[in-house]
Image: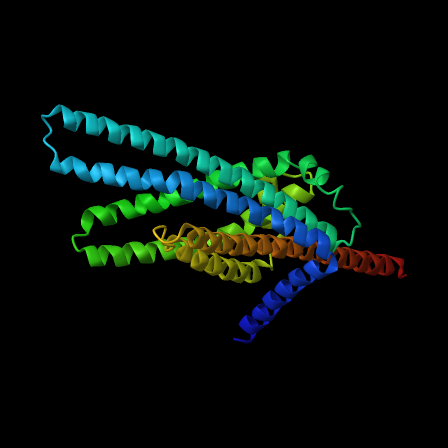
Length: 317
């Protein structure tokens, strides 16, 4: 219990250190925070005006098919209309996913660079800052690609395990409970795996290391920090999940102005939570490096002590 409380104190310490970064360089940190919030707002508007109308249209068109006679030309024409709506939905979905990925990566690079510069107290003018993230685009892009592959593979395993449950379960209530429990279990374990994923992104931005090498280095230097970062991931994950559920329940049938305002505010909060999580990982990266440096120094001290003792023994008559 005492060790858990110590971990919680250290988690609060990381959060407090991350909060202080915004006060160290207010102009830079708040400017870079506006960027991901703006991008998330654009993504939300794209979703409202392009994706959701396509889903609604597809559902409405599909619901009419069972009530039509399959032998009539009207049925065939309507079926072709459904296929066309589905094709359009897939195209928009791919565009949406690509735009989200690009915006997310740019936001990560910008906030990590700004956090690192502020943490090291480097003086960089805001007009000079945009050039810095562009110099380190290749590394995080490669690492981001590997993380995306690992994430897809991880959730593919979830579907493989879920499929037998769908076949064997006859009770819908029991199936929903088992699926929900399995999803929560996988989500929690993903939060643990994401420790290395997030830290490898920070490494690929701040160092000339990327891809599998960055993932390996993150796994190496994070030792001793995993409990704290795992709790942080759960904390930020629950916050983002809560806001996302509220976004899903925004009623688009209400006033358009109210709907857009509510949605944009909630999406801004989700973006702020995710960006603050990256700030904490930047702080954690420097703490990991500091701990690693202390370990190296302690090993050198031990080697020096052994060498001195050996030399003294050899010098005795």
